[in-house]
Length: 184
Image (cartoon, rainbow, N blue to C red; front, side):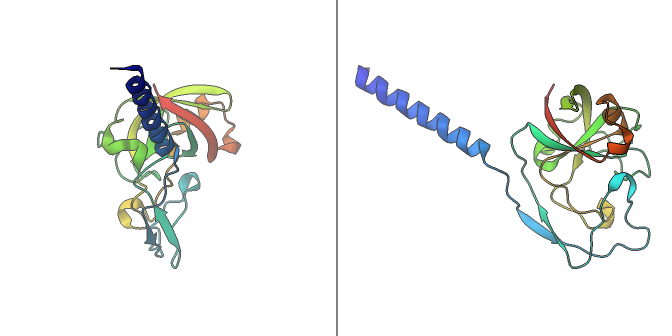
């Protein structure tokens, strides 16, 4: 191979690398939407600041998530009768709110590829390890199975009280927190 071919090959590889970085850095865009309905009486559990679907509102759905990194930490109960709904998707069990466990938006959940694996969550100047046990469904919602709550956004790490405590966040400030996370 002569030096001209080597230069062309190097430019080709550089362009492919640049293209893949641009594609990866693109934001996840909604894949559809769901029409809200009015939940039946007692149909929407508002524990931990959970929102309920509303008649006449539309909610975006996502099958993807942005690249791993920046996220919004939200509060969830993984216990029976908690606002998390049914048992966790990874192991079909409920989990104590005193255990550091999380659910990830659909794209990050990746069809269960992160099930029962730890992620590192950094926020409020601290880092904690938490086990992925569930999915924050970004594709469905506003029905009985999803406790009449809207679909999750594409960038949510839904965490038990144990995670919030480990991050040292005052209970008065629990709800949503900008964080960074990574596979541990």
